Length: 281
Image (cartoon, rainbow, N blue to C red; front, side, top):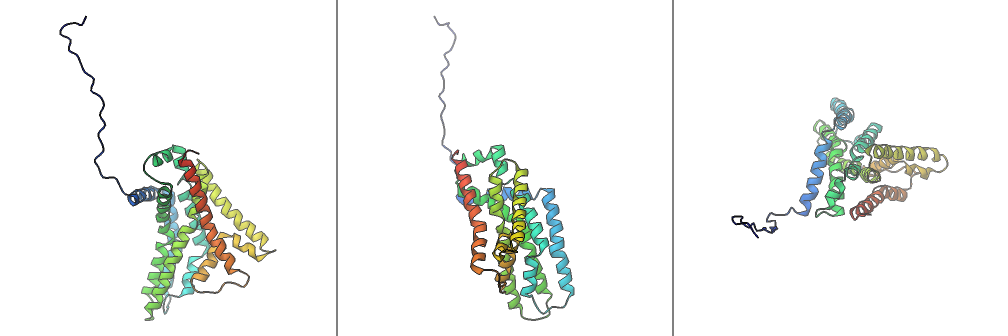
């Protein structure tokens, strides 16, 4: 018996309404990943400190020095020397360690890696987005300041051959791009192998440092071991890029192979690592 006066309440079934918004395109998703990463890194006081100190030593002081010294134009030898100084290499390596250490490891630790791939994003989009953010951050030291230095030297030259100086500026841009990208794939690979950014940071720095030590030890037996040292690889690359001859003991083909392999092999491995994690393996 139903009590009179008690109204029957019908259950309204859940109705899912289709989303009518406009989906972001492929490149916009990559841009968002890169932009977010870049903005987060610029908030790090340690990265900012390294950037300020490194720019002052590598750019501000040389600008003052070359501006006060009479010069006909922008010399290739001057910029080649500036692009492979020990100070530039050390600060670049330290910045790579700090920038790349938590690029992927933090996503693995916080499970935000799963959130990325729960949406319409591919492995290459994720990797390009992260690399783009790392590239933008590192370029504030390895690309933009050297170009500013080259422009400053050109602006204060006493000669009128600006076309030659602009050519050197173009080479400097290419050298800066390579300097920026060179260590990023390796840093991302180490970051993808652990959930602890401290392990990734120490691992990246120590492996590069060990390669330099091994190269120095075995060079006495065979000069080809010099190509195991990343700092020497970049040094010889700049020599070739600015139009200078390689030392007789350096094999040009070997240099090209090692130079390419140092970037492409870690990039391929980190791609495979990310793809496997994305599919739950």
